[in-house]
Image 1 (spheres, rainbow, N blue to C red):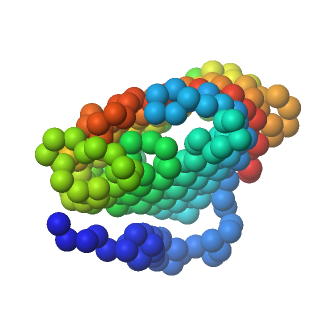
Image 2 (tube, rainbow, N blue to C red):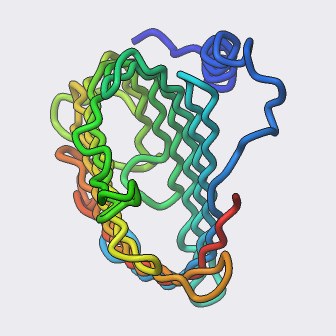
Image 3 (cartoon, one colour):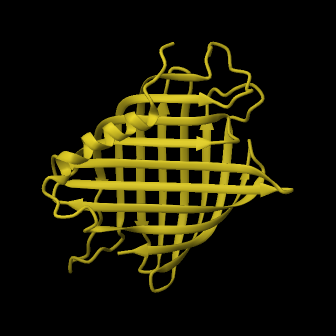
Length: 261
């Protein structure tokens, strides 16, 4: 199998190509960004059984028809004096509205897990999205339920590298496999009232040697000001993993969230 292009080079060129058209009308990359930063403690079962800490960041910028979305996640754990969990996730998505509910998107995602079935994953893709729910409003124009639901699907290029020392499943002859993949995602947010909100996010990547799907559900409650408490539960599942590895991991998190406006 041909060696894939260097990951930093692929992601760098891709993000540059995505960002330049959208940034032409932007006055400043730092203007208009909003989002959240989180600090959590979590309990993981499956390929890792550990208590750990996590840091998260989500940023969003809207400029007319364009939207930039960035996310980052780092989880770290130790047990008996040794590191037994280290996960890094990075993602960027660029949306461009082409109608009241329809948008085009391009995205780049990178994930690294030193103790999971696959040490490294990255995906570059594009597709189309649809706003199923854009909110219900009262007669005064104020949100009544605050429900938002987006779905999207597309295709792209995926690379997946199994951890060294793993026994590969039947039909897989290399630690690193690359090729075309199909993607689908659902993003649901529900503002229950002024202080409490719920989210339910799902993503699927279908590849020739493995199909990966994750789902995360979380409940957020405002404490005071821009600080909130959050509890969440996440399931990660692979259909084909190296022998001796679990197909499913779960993560339960409880933490503090700071909203940046």
